Image: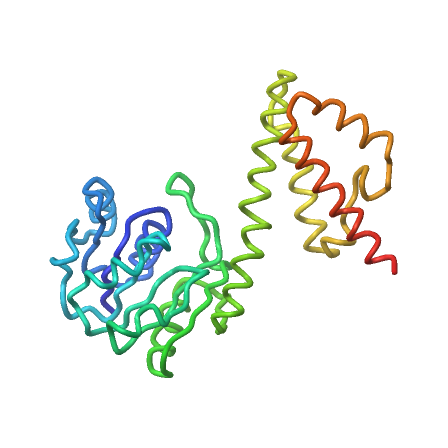
Length: 258
């Protein structure tokens, strides 16, 4: 199976490299940034270009791993109408292709990607969708060479999962950043929190997130909550965030206890 990878950012980098390792042929790498195109092209032993007008014809799959806000424009610039065209976005419908090509779908790996860190694809959920059974079969075949966790989902399911993932991953990482900044203020390393973070994730997996909830808000310890709010007196934005999260934990606890 021949694949043209359009986009050489974090998602495109990992998909192209893992597909190449799985013995798929990366026919071409396309990226608007020459340095990204060159480096990924070298990694997967493929020619590369920065111009959509130079996209190779004849590939089985055209895989778009570009930012959501750029996808519509990039699709419109692709002169190739054959093959299956699929994007990797969690929040966009596959119908974004409908006016441009006949065969299309979605190939969405649910994971956070950074070029600096390798990932094991075998247990990463890959959500797929296509506009007909033949295309779905080909996307399933491609996914099966990367992961043991393949899901056929609707756009509405994928959109809801993407929203949940933003809370679980992106927002939690932002909270890690806040925690790191607070620790630096006391000349303490972030590593101190790593056992706590690991245990929190493991408990959420074994129990449920609701059952695993602990801390001053979960036990309604108003003295500690007020002390923390006082400590945040000089950072009103962070103090407001603390209040919002505390109130949400209290609300969830009240709902569960009913």
